[in-house]
Image (cartoon, rainbow, N blue to C red; front, side, top):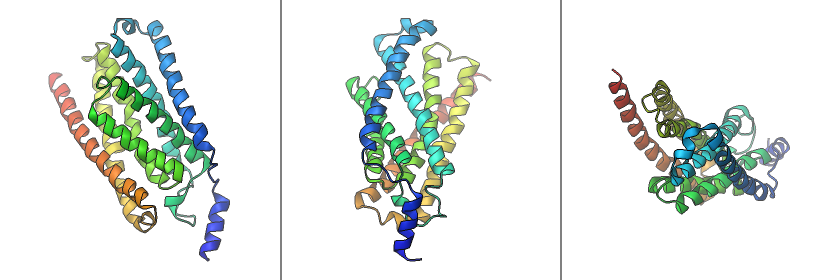
Length: 263
Protein backbone atom coordinates (compact mmCIF):
# COMPACT_ATOMS: atom_id res chain seq x y z
CA UNK A 1 0.00 0.00 0.00
CA UNK A 2 1.38 3.42 -0.98
CA UNK A 3 2.06 6.15 1.54
CA UNK A 4 -0.78 8.20 0.04
CA UNK A 5 -3.24 5.35 0.54
CA UNK A 6 -2.02 4.85 4.10
CA UNK A 7 -2.51 8.54 4.83
CA UNK A 8 -6.03 8.50 3.38
CA UNK A 9 -6.92 5.46 5.46
CA UNK A 10 -5.61 7.10 8.61
CA UNK A 11 -7.59 10.29 7.92
CA UNK A 12 -10.78 8.26 7.52
CA UNK A 13 -10.14 6.66 10.91
CA UNK A 14 -9.15 9.73 12.84
CA UNK A 15 -11.43 12.57 13.85
CA UNK A 16 -9.19 15.46 12.96
CA UNK A 17 -8.82 18.18 15.58
CA UNK A 18 -10.98 21.21 14.99
CA UNK A 19 -8.75 24.33 15.11
CA UNK A 20 -11.26 26.01 17.42
CA UNK A 21 -10.96 23.32 20.10
CA UNK A 22 -7.96 24.90 21.92
CA UNK A 23 -9.78 28.23 22.13
CA UNK A 24 -12.72 26.51 23.80
CA UNK A 25 -10.96 23.94 25.99
CA UNK A 26 -8.34 26.23 27.55
CA UNK A 27 -10.89 28.78 28.88
CA UNK A 28 -13.06 25.84 29.94
CA UNK A 29 -10.15 24.45 31.98
CA UNK A 30 -9.54 27.85 33.60
CA UNK A 31 -13.22 28.38 34.40
CA UNK A 32 -13.62 24.85 35.75
CA UNK A 33 -10.60 25.35 38.02
CA UNK A 34 -12.01 28.63 39.32
CA UNK A 35 -15.43 27.03 39.85
CA UNK A 36 -13.98 24.13 41.87
CA UNK A 37 -11.88 26.57 43.94
CA UNK A 38 -14.88 28.77 44.75
CA UNK A 39 -17.22 25.84 45.49
CA UNK A 40 -14.63 24.34 47.83
CA UNK A 41 -14.27 27.65 49.65
CA UNK A 42 -18.05 27.95 49.88
CA UNK A 43 -18.79 24.44 51.17
CA UNK A 44 -15.72 23.55 53.26
CA UNK A 45 -16.77 25.78 56.14
CA UNK A 46 -20.09 23.93 56.29
CA UNK A 47 -18.80 20.36 56.12
CA UNK A 48 -15.39 20.70 57.80
CA UNK A 49 -15.23 22.38 61.22
CA UNK A 50 -11.44 22.71 61.05
CA UNK A 51 -11.66 24.87 57.91
CA UNK A 52 -12.71 28.01 59.79
CA UNK A 53 -9.72 27.64 62.11
CA UNK A 54 -7.21 27.68 59.26
CA UNK A 55 -5.12 30.71 58.40
CA UNK A 56 -5.84 32.57 55.15
CA UNK A 57 -2.99 30.92 53.27
CA UNK A 58 -4.00 27.50 54.59
CA UNK A 59 -7.51 28.04 53.26
CA UNK A 60 -6.05 29.05 49.90
CA UNK A 61 -4.00 25.86 49.80
CA UNK A 62 -7.01 23.79 50.92
CA UNK A 63 -9.05 25.12 48.00
CA UNK A 64 -6.12 24.88 45.61
CA UNK A 65 -5.59 21.21 46.43
CA UNK A 66 -9.27 20.49 45.80
CA UNK A 67 -8.82 22.10 42.40
CA UNK A 68 -5.75 20.00 41.61
CA UNK A 69 -7.51 16.83 42.79
CA UNK A 70 -10.43 17.34 40.41
CA UNK A 71 -8.03 18.01 37.53
CA UNK A 72 -6.01 14.92 38.42
CA UNK A 73 -9.09 12.69 38.37
CA UNK A 74 -10.20 14.15 35.03
CA UNK A 75 -6.86 13.99 33.23
CA UNK A 76 -5.95 10.56 34.63
CA UNK A 77 -9.23 9.12 33.33
CA UNK A 78 -8.68 10.83 29.96
CA UNK A 79 -5.06 9.66 29.74
CA UNK A 80 -5.83 6.06 30.66
CA UNK A 81 -8.58 5.96 28.05
CA UNK A 82 -6.46 7.54 25.30
CA UNK A 83 -3.38 5.38 25.96
CA UNK A 84 -4.86 1.98 26.78
CA UNK A 85 -8.48 1.88 25.59
CA UNK A 86 -8.68 4.11 22.53
CA UNK A 87 -7.46 2.80 19.16
CA UNK A 88 -6.13 6.24 18.23
CA UNK A 89 -2.51 5.29 18.90
CA UNK A 90 -2.76 1.61 18.03
CA UNK A 91 0.01 0.10 15.91
CA UNK A 92 -2.71 -1.72 13.95
CA UNK A 93 -3.37 1.45 11.96
CA UNK A 94 -1.18 3.03 9.33
CA UNK A 95 0.54 6.34 9.83
CA UNK A 96 2.95 7.74 12.37
CA UNK A 97 1.64 7.57 15.94
CA UNK A 98 3.62 10.69 16.78
CA UNK A 99 1.34 12.76 14.54
CA UNK A 100 -2.02 11.31 15.53
CA UNK A 101 -4.61 13.46 17.25
CA UNK A 102 -8.36 13.82 17.47
CA UNK A 103 -10.89 16.33 18.70
CA UNK A 104 -11.27 14.40 21.95
CA UNK A 105 -7.52 14.07 22.59
CA UNK A 106 -6.94 17.77 21.88
CA UNK A 107 -9.92 18.77 24.04
CA UNK A 108 -8.55 16.84 27.03
CA UNK A 109 -5.12 18.45 26.69
CA UNK A 110 -6.69 21.90 26.35
CA UNK A 111 -8.58 21.53 29.63
CA UNK A 112 -5.32 20.45 31.27
CA UNK A 113 -3.52 23.50 29.85
CA UNK A 114 -6.22 25.69 31.40
CA UNK A 115 -5.65 24.05 34.77
CA UNK A 116 -1.86 24.41 34.62
CA UNK A 117 -2.18 28.09 33.70
CA UNK A 118 -4.49 28.66 36.68
CA UNK A 119 -2.39 26.69 39.14
CA UNK A 120 0.89 28.21 37.96
CA UNK A 121 -0.63 31.67 38.33
CA UNK A 122 -1.60 30.87 41.92
CA UNK A 123 1.86 29.48 42.68
CA UNK A 124 3.46 32.71 41.45
CA UNK A 125 0.93 34.91 43.25
CA UNK A 126 1.38 33.22 46.63
CA UNK A 127 5.00 32.15 46.12
CA UNK A 128 6.44 30.25 47.92
CA UNK A 129 3.46 29.30 50.10
CA UNK A 130 1.95 26.89 47.54
CA UNK A 131 5.24 25.39 46.42
CA UNK A 132 8.88 26.25 45.86
CA UNK A 133 10.99 26.34 42.71
CA UNK A 134 10.57 22.60 42.09
CA UNK A 135 6.82 23.15 41.65
CA UNK A 136 7.45 26.07 39.30
CA UNK A 137 9.79 23.96 37.16
CA UNK A 138 7.37 21.01 37.16
CA UNK A 139 4.41 23.16 36.12
CA UNK A 140 6.31 25.13 33.48
CA UNK A 141 7.61 21.95 31.83
CA UNK A 142 4.18 20.33 32.01
CA UNK A 143 2.46 23.41 30.60
CA UNK A 144 4.97 23.71 27.76
CA UNK A 145 4.74 20.04 26.77
CA UNK A 146 0.95 19.78 27.02
CA UNK A 147 0.37 23.07 25.16
CA UNK A 148 2.73 22.04 22.35
CA UNK A 149 1.04 18.65 21.91
CA UNK A 150 -2.37 20.31 21.96
CA UNK A 151 -1.55 23.04 19.41
CA UNK A 152 0.52 20.96 16.97
CA UNK A 153 -0.98 17.48 17.39
CA UNK A 154 2.56 16.08 17.74
CA UNK A 155 3.52 13.62 20.46
CA UNK A 156 0.10 13.49 22.08
CA UNK A 157 0.55 9.81 22.96
CA UNK A 158 3.65 10.50 25.06
CA UNK A 159 2.04 13.56 26.60
CA UNK A 160 -0.86 11.44 27.79
CA UNK A 161 1.55 8.77 29.08
CA UNK A 162 3.24 11.37 31.26
CA UNK A 163 -0.10 12.78 32.41
CA UNK A 164 -1.08 9.38 33.82
CA UNK A 165 1.33 10.25 36.61
CA UNK A 166 -1.34 12.68 37.88
CA UNK A 167 -3.01 9.62 39.41
CA UNK A 168 -0.79 10.16 42.46
CA UNK A 169 -2.06 13.72 43.06
CA UNK A 170 -5.30 12.88 44.96
CA UNK A 171 -3.34 10.77 47.44
CA UNK A 172 -0.77 13.51 48.00
CA UNK A 173 -3.52 16.07 48.54
CA UNK A 174 -5.41 13.76 50.92
CA UNK A 175 -2.22 13.40 52.96
CA UNK A 176 -2.05 17.18 53.33
CA UNK A 177 -5.72 17.31 54.39
CA UNK A 178 -5.18 14.59 57.00
CA UNK A 179 -2.12 16.37 58.35
CA UNK A 180 -3.93 19.72 58.48
CA UNK A 181 -6.88 18.10 60.27
CA UNK A 182 -4.53 16.77 62.96
CA UNK A 183 -4.85 13.13 61.87
CA UNK A 184 -1.17 12.44 61.35
CA UNK A 185 -1.25 9.58 63.87
CA UNK A 186 -4.39 7.99 62.45
CA UNK A 187 -4.65 4.69 60.63
CA UNK A 188 -5.95 6.55 57.58
CA UNK A 189 -2.71 8.54 57.44
CA UNK A 190 -0.66 5.33 57.49
CA UNK A 191 -2.77 3.66 54.78
CA UNK A 192 -2.52 6.82 52.70
CA UNK A 193 1.28 6.70 52.91
CA UNK A 194 1.40 3.08 51.74
CA UNK A 195 -0.97 3.79 48.84
CA UNK A 196 1.08 6.81 47.77
CA UNK A 197 4.27 4.72 47.81
CA UNK A 198 2.92 2.04 45.47
CA UNK A 199 0.98 4.49 43.27
CA UNK A 200 4.11 6.59 42.85
CA UNK A 201 6.19 3.51 42.04
CA UNK A 202 3.78 2.43 39.30
CA UNK A 203 2.67 5.78 37.85
CA UNK A 204 5.85 7.84 38.15
CA UNK A 205 8.66 5.28 38.00
CA UNK A 206 7.60 2.13 36.13
CA UNK A 207 5.29 3.93 33.71
CA UNK A 208 8.06 6.36 32.77
CA UNK A 209 10.35 3.41 32.10
CA UNK A 210 7.67 1.96 29.83
CA UNK A 211 7.37 5.30 28.04
CA UNK A 212 11.11 5.48 27.40
CA UNK A 213 10.97 1.92 26.04
CA UNK A 214 8.05 2.87 23.79
CA UNK A 215 9.99 5.87 22.48
CA UNK A 216 12.93 3.57 21.76
CA UNK A 217 10.71 1.17 19.77
CA UNK A 218 9.23 4.08 17.77
CA UNK A 219 12.39 6.18 17.57
CA UNK A 220 12.18 6.46 13.78
CA UNK A 221 8.74 8.06 14.13
CA UNK A 222 9.80 10.37 16.95
CA UNK A 223 12.71 11.64 14.85
CA UNK A 224 10.27 12.79 12.17
CA UNK A 225 8.72 15.26 14.59
CA UNK A 226 9.73 18.92 14.66
CA UNK A 227 13.05 19.44 16.45
CA UNK A 228 11.32 21.25 19.31
CA UNK A 229 8.83 18.38 19.62
CA UNK A 230 11.70 15.89 19.76
CA UNK A 231 13.31 17.96 22.49
CA UNK A 232 10.12 17.84 24.54
CA UNK A 233 9.76 14.08 24.10
CA UNK A 234 13.34 13.42 25.20
CA UNK A 235 14.04 16.15 27.76
CA UNK A 236 10.79 16.83 29.63
CA UNK A 237 10.12 13.20 30.71
CA UNK A 238 13.80 12.85 31.66
CA UNK A 239 13.73 15.94 33.89
CA UNK A 240 10.41 14.87 35.41
CA UNK A 241 11.86 11.40 36.03
CA UNK A 242 14.74 12.87 38.03
CA UNK A 243 12.25 14.93 40.06
CA UNK A 244 10.01 11.88 40.54
CA UNK A 245 12.94 9.77 41.77
CA UNK A 246 13.95 12.53 44.20
CA UNK A 247 10.41 12.81 45.57
CA UNK A 248 10.10 9.01 45.67
CA UNK A 249 13.17 8.82 47.89
CA UNK A 250 11.52 11.31 50.27
CA UNK A 251 8.27 9.32 50.22
CA UNK A 252 10.16 6.13 51.03
CA UNK A 253 12.04 7.74 53.92
CA UNK A 254 8.81 9.24 55.26
CA UNK A 255 6.93 5.93 55.07
CA UNK A 256 9.83 4.09 56.69
CA UNK A 257 9.87 6.62 59.52
CA UNK A 258 6.10 6.37 60.02
CA UNK A 259 6.17 2.58 60.11
CA UNK A 260 9.08 2.60 62.58
CA UNK A 261 7.10 4.79 64.99
CA UNK A 262 4.19 2.32 65.01
CA UNK A 263 6.26 -0.72 65.89
